[in-house]
Amino acid sequence: MNRNEFARRRRHLLRMMGEGSIAILPAKPVCKRNRDNEYPYRPDSDFWYLTGFPEPEAVLVLVPGRKHGEYILFCRERDAQMERWSGSVAGQEGAVEQYGADDSFPIADIDDILPGLLENRNQVYYTMGRERGFDQQLIGWINRLRGKARAGVHVPDNIIALDHLLHEMRLFKSAAEIKLMRQAAQVSAQAHCRAMKACRPGLYEYQIEAELLHEFVCNGCRSPAYSSIVAGGKNACILHYTDNRDRLKNNDLLLIDAGAEYQNYASDITRTFPVNGKFRRPQKALYNVVLAAQQAAIEQIRPGNHWNDPHEAAVQVITGGLAKLGLLKGKVSTLIKKEAYKTFFMHRTGHWLGMDVHDVGEYKVGNSWRVLEPGMVMTVEPGIYIPPGSKGVDKKWWNIGIRIEDDILVTKSGCEVLTAGVPRTVEEIEALMRSPES
Ligand code: GLY
Ligand code: MN
Ligand code: MN
Image (cartoon, rainbow, N blue to C red):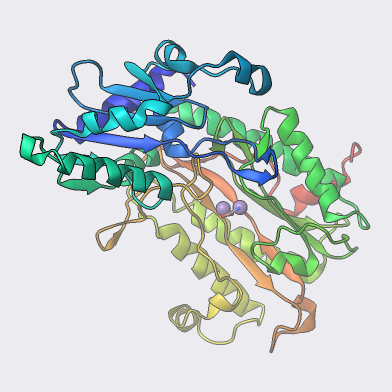
């Protein structure tokens, strides 16, 4: 992403913060996997959004109106010996020249420098409770200033969560962000097609996971955006199933919920298809209910409609469909009022999508559902889940878990499905699984 994009975001935030304030945002620490071995480092999304700075041990400080520069970046000092082992670091010079900081100091000096930056500020924008160690450090700096109150130093009165301003910004995706999300979506769509073609009875779920990962990594997406769910048969009824260890059975469905992350932007796709390439009759009947629910939900996505409109549409279609198939009994309007559908469809129809798979942004403003606006990106993912042993449910429906999930951008005139590159209908899926190269 272009450097100007990060600069534009910081300018926007600085304007909203106003004079007399300061914002402080630490990078996420490295996380140990086991002795001497770390998880791959993935920057905190808020920190990345404002800096594009990829290193840990860094702190962003924004001070509107500061004469010597409004954007200060604390980061590691360069060290030739260390860099032989772990690769190059930007250092203070790099922070200024490559990352556009106005001023940069070694992270080791933060205790000496930050209290001075806090002096005479009225409010501190900082989100408590995320980095416990850093919370303590900040409280320590403020207490130190209190000791200087008699010398006329003004101590900030308010600590305000930075989240409110920042997450509102992140909810609206810029053209540059949409480009990255499109790429993540396209790679994920290819991966799902690859998985459909590779699928055979007798394979293990992790072998299908390997197909997905292969497509992600080969296309520059080094990590999935979340742990992939590859769930055959009854496993699909466990909503967060990630063991991916069972053998795929003939006549079962396979539910795959997997999305690539591209340059820190997520995609999130679910497809459900027959392990042997051909839907059985009950599977097809339920699949078409979920598909119709998803279609009805997507049709509700346009500026002016509210966040819950797609969910309400999905609930309507799923309840109607379950009633028609005899899985629910009674009048559809009563079943909806009593939330009877929740036995089979117990989650929401979607969430915001962005750098985080469950992205930031409020779903309500005051007591009202949020009105949709261009630039928002959301998922639409209705489902029906019928685990084995479901009471009062004919056995022919057992072991069926179906979800269909796509990523949708709200546009000026309606919406665009970013993940359209992977088949959705019964006919399209069966045709792809039959195709000669599969
Ligand atoms: N993969 C997480 C979700 O669908 O919400
Ligand atoms: Mn999702
Ligand atoms: Mn998902």
